[in-house]
Image (cartoon, rainbow, N blue to C red; front, top):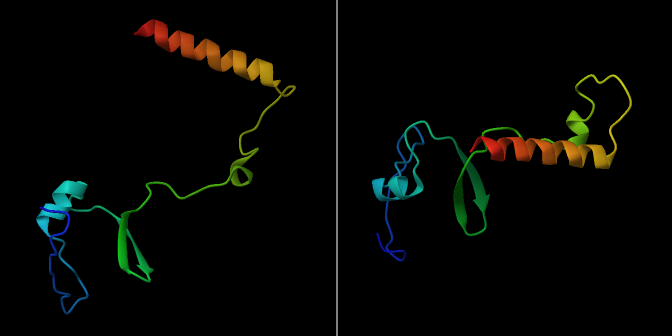
Length: 91
């Protein structure tokens, strides 16, 4: 389908709109795909809905119990590096 090709669809009595199969295939939107609907000045925008709700660090910070002294940045960096090396050695 050409980028400039315009397609037409109809709103049903239930408010449903059928997206043309060429668009659904190109976007890989199968049955059950959840979409965000955004009303913009240019028209209606459809985007895949995020799988997880957006969270902020302050929403989850400290949610897991921890005993002992906090790790330093150097200790955290060393732990991440050790895990990366371990995973790389598996391959």
